[in-house]
Image (cartoon, rainbow, N blue to C red; front, top):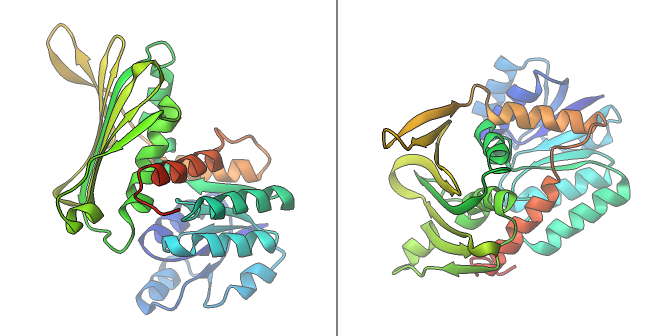
Length: 296
């Protein structure tokens, strides 16, 4: 059995690189960008380029499809793949509405197929490390800040905030209250989100997502009962109480994408998944609705 890739943009290329190390990739569907097609033929000459989904869906040797396309197409492509008997790996978000997400989960279950959502930060070695650390040292405050410039073609909530929601809810559960801070202009409303979240046991979290920033930084500060940690990009720092400074505590040596792709392959091969990521996908969309960022 082999796989097929649907979508050959920046992320689609990353996915074909990783999955080709693990399984045979027979097809790659893309709409016809000649630069991308040349890239495919040069780097993966054995992968057949197709401009129609029919060969992929009709080929009984294709067990799974990997979907890395614009967000608005995730639902329709995933649904078609499932109805044609294919397991699905789809980049987050699973869909743009609660109804879409719930529908895909039901179809996958009915068809006895695997549905996997690419919430990549949940496979980051530092996230996995933090999950272990807080088992005996619970979180009391959480602060997440993601600054970058660009990706204006997608909704900021669906594209970026869903990542942060998946991290927070995996660590703290579902918030009891969300407070969205209003912005002063339409430009800021579309590109900057700041909100506070309240959880059980009086745990609080703040989230900032800014895609108008001149700097590129992903930073999470976690205050636990006994320690303070800072997760910045691929490094985890811990506050040294004696020297009163942060010291490098852990550095990831493997990419989250590599872990995520291996997890999907293992899942398809009959092993249990690390966690139910379709559940996390559904929770993320529910939280977007609560923030009123999405009319879903």
